[in-house]
Structures are given as structure tokens and as C-alpha cells.
Image (cartoon, rainbow, N blue to C red; front, side, top):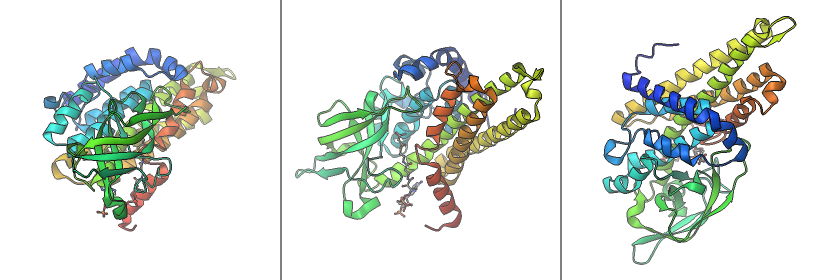
Length: 389
Ligand code: CAA
């Protein structure tokens, strides 16, 4: 629709490749995976082969060496087909990969990024705990340096860890110096095959049912000191920096869901007849379609803008907090609203599991919740505007 002159030929190529894969390989199986709640492992491996699991990771570490805009375009196209696949792509790329890319040493990137970037392994990110969600600095899990100074001993329970049931590696945030609050959080690189790590209950979810989410438990897990990501005490800032990047991806996911619901609604309005005419000829349907389109395109502009800012920030080092939160807030609210209206346009068919509209609606809801609720995004935006806390 627009001539986005910031999109290079490479961007258009990866967008096309993602669209082609999503429509050919994901659309036909999306309903099955939503219904069964199975994890789409075969498709995850294929996405790894196509470079979608480590889009911004340099080739040196097994990735596609593209930029945040490319990642966002892939998120949009994959999520148009199925938001669960989008979630898995997002966690690998941003929540796991981004932290290593920005804060990892060369050795850490070599060992911890490469198998994830090519899709052989799956990565996850764990910040939330049963008693700390939005208030993420208030965590109870503890990591204590052993007497010889070689290992941190980690104990605690983390919750709502996306991809955890299948994750090989996880970036985990724990308190090392509780008296320092935010400045006492440290980020660790965890291998899920090691002793002291286990998984708790898997969450039965309303939407994104094919993405797997569970608790993880640490019982005297020994993490060598060279597996601290960044420096001890830097964990909260690392967690927030990663979330800024992650929120751009979730905006792309929400945009994809909303666009899919709008596309289906336009087609239905052109075909379905009532009272002797196409329902698209009724002003009330026209109003819905027009408003849906405006909000989808406004989401697209905010989302692509945030992605472009993220790419500029790689050189300038500036934070993308405002752009990321605006894109995530607006796109996720749009996804929820557009999918609601899409069901209304489809009437009973929208409510039926015979069509994907009700899946879009259930999947859209999580985009207003994870990686920071809409309420948290509004708080972040207002703080960025006023400088007040
Ligand atoms: N980038 C870098 N640093 C940041 C930052 C950012 N975006 N945001 C805050 N910081 C820094 C601040 O500058 C401050 O540093 P100083 O002490 O040096 O000044 C420090 O972090 C503390 O900041 P605040 O005082 O603002 O912290 P706060 O306690 O008020 O919390 C918050 C801020 C925005 C509410 C934050 O806690 C937040 O984003 N909460 C939501 C958490 C979230 O999104 N959780 C979802 C987790 S992932 C998930 O959903 C599961 C999954 O697997 C997908």
C-alpha cells in the first residue's frame, strides 16, 4: 500500500519468503496445532533452515545477519498465518537472542547463540515469577556465589516462561544482592539439561495454544560464573533492554493477527449477502471495515517506525523504549479490537471454529498482556514523556 523507501530489496525478499512459507506450511496446520496444543516442532526446524530463528544474528554465529525491520516483517507474516508460530519465532529472536547479541561475549555468542540461531535448539527468557509479573524487579529467586567463587547456586521458581517445555537454553534473571533491589539482579545463561533444573506445570492457555508455556524450577542449580550475561547487578537493565526489543516483535505479531482478521472480513463482506445485497454494501459494515483498516495501517506505521529506530539505535546506543512501547500498545489494542469486529462482521461464522476468526481473537488477547501489559506500556510511555516516575 505504501512505498516504504526504508525497505531494501533484502527486506522485500525476506518478507516474501516468510509470507510464502507461512501461507504454504503454516496456514494448513494452524487449526490442528491450536486444537491439540501440540508444539509445531517440525515447522520450527524448517523456520530455522530459512533463517527465521536468528534473523539479526551475524552469520559468524549461525544467523541470517539481517536487521530488526527484517525480523518485524517476518513476525508479521508468520503471525498472519498463526500467532503461536509467531510467538516461538519472537522468543528465539528477541527474548533469547537479543540479550546475547547486545551483552554476550564472543565466547558466549559462539556457544549460546549459534545452535539457537539456526533453529537446532530453542531458546527462552525467564523474568516473571508467581509473585512478580509487572513488578518485575521484585523477584524472589536467588543466586548465591559459592565459597570458591566459581559458581552461582540458583534457587527459585519462575513462571510463564514461553517455549520453556522445549527450550534447550534460557536467559534467566535472579536476585544476587536483594538489598540492592533493581541493581541486585543478575542475568544467567542456563542449560536446561543440567542438574538442578526442572520444569513445573504447563499452562493451559486461552490462545497461542501451540506455543508452550511452563514454570521452571531451580533447586541448587550450579551456574558457572562465566555464564553471567553482562555483569553481576546489570540484570534488570538487560531484562528491560531485551523487552524493548521484544515489544517491537510483539507489535509485529499483533499487526499480523489484525491484518489477517481484516483480510478475512473484507472477503466476507464481498461475498456474504443479507437482505438482497452484499453485507459490504451496508454502511454499518463499511464503517467497521474503514476503521479497522485505519487502525491496522496506523499500527503498521508505528511498528515499522519502532523497528527502524531499533536499527538506528544499534549505532547510536540510544534506548528505543518510547517507540517500542507505543508500537506494542497500539498494535496490540488494535489486534484485540479488529479481531472483535471481525467476528461481529462474520456473525455466527465468526464464532464458529470452522473459521479462524475466533482463533485470531483468542490469540490477539495475549499481545495486550505479555512482554508488558497495556497498562505497563501506558505507564512507560507517560514516564518517557514527562520524565516523572
Ligand atoms: N531500558 C534500559 N534500562 C531501563 C529500562 C529500559 N527500557 N527501563 C528501566 N530501566 C532502568 C532504569 O533506568 C533504572 O535504572 P537506574 O536505577 O540506573 O536509574 C532501572 O532500570 C529501574 O527502572 P524503574 O525504576 O523504572 O523500574 P520499575 O520497578 O519502576 O519498573 C517497569 C519499570 C517498566 C514497570 C518494568 O518493571 C516493566 O517493564 N515491567 C513489565 C515486565 C514485563 O514486561 N514482563 C513480561 C516478561 S516476559 C513475558 O511476558 C513472558 C514470555 O516468556 C514472553
